Length: 328
Image (tube, rainbow, N blue to C red; front, side, top):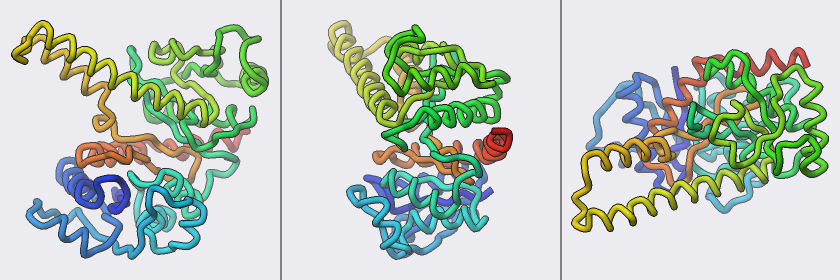
């Protein structure tokens, strides 16, 4: 198993990206290919544990966070994310992990690996820690403007992801909306509701935002604009809740000497809410595995994103999606 990593992408690249790659190679026994400026990468590797599983692929260019994705991948053909995606497309790597410019990662993977035949719009799937298990929500930002048919595609891909990676036999599919009734919503959701109702999927109807984390559905679909807003709001709410609990805890334990029980609760909650524990979000619908992680990712998040990439490759979810679109 080989996972390519854009070593130059992200707020803390290349140091934290390189460290995360090394940690993943040692802990999981997976080969990692660090793609980027070879001199910079080697500097970051000084004083770190050596592993024959860690390789370097030189790339002379970097796409910044503020650069246009479409223009930059055409102009910077030797950019680290472009080369990393190319390794997957050419079969030299089984998956790619990227913490840099999300749009550039999407564009590079689309260009270098191609879409799964039949898929019109790949999507970013976010994996939410539901109260009774993982909830898959897509799209989370790849497609800001959508047609009803796109959301049906997202539902098909989400169904395949739930079956192959999370071993859910008959995933419940929901449509994110402003109310449970079939008559609620805008033109997009009203038409999508009709299409999903007439599909072979296990469509259970509309899902309101308040129900997202309570596992009413295993897979929830929406347009990318809405999904990204929900994602960012969720991140902010999680940070607020943790900060609020800490603020109130100080009133009970002013000296900061919290009880063991409180420490355990906070530690467990942090593991559930902390993005670095979960790795990243898969870009699905492309002919390969791409995990997009947070721009603020440090070594731990990169290590877990690589772990996720391995899990997704081993699950065969790309073939599962392809089989669904052969039927449709």
